[in-house]
Length: 271
Image (cartoon, rainbow, N blue to C red):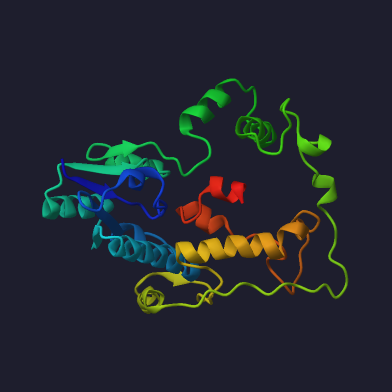
């Protein structure tokens, strides 16, 4: 049985989802730049650059691993998948369950889905928790997660430090002449430069990419380490602080990598 594995742009992790069991000798990979999606809205330059460049870098990484990778531009995602299925002769198309309900509906008749493990909580577990709640409050979900995942709780399920949160201690103002750590810069390679040259084709706005956002798995891991070494200690106390001199203060800048799969929440928690 020859498989074609479809990777959405938020499924870029080698050890998760449909890719976890992929075999370079047997499976083909398809990533699709849907022109319908790309032309259907205005994009911030940095966001579109990040999405496209991360996907192309990931495709290049899989090619180096020996996979038969098809990176295609097509009118829609489904058309791109079906065109590559015909080329490869795949008998089944497999994908990680999309986080997008729209894409799930679009693909469900042609694609076999594997449960999405990019989130710490499967949909079924969340639904079971939600059914027992009178109100859906983030604080209650947060406590449930801490106990379920055994994150900073003792053997009785009580929070380490004696409190579930320390928000009152997270409101310090920045001292005068505060010394800000420099941002970590991620140099651009040929793939990045190619994506930059294509952005003018789309309806974009905002500042051009400047090296703030990594576009590779290696860069994402480097950003994680940089946060832990240089920012974690002071993140809590100055979490709510703002400054005209520095837009990030001690925030991690990790969310984009968690959103597209270059980082997995479990590995971030473990570190």
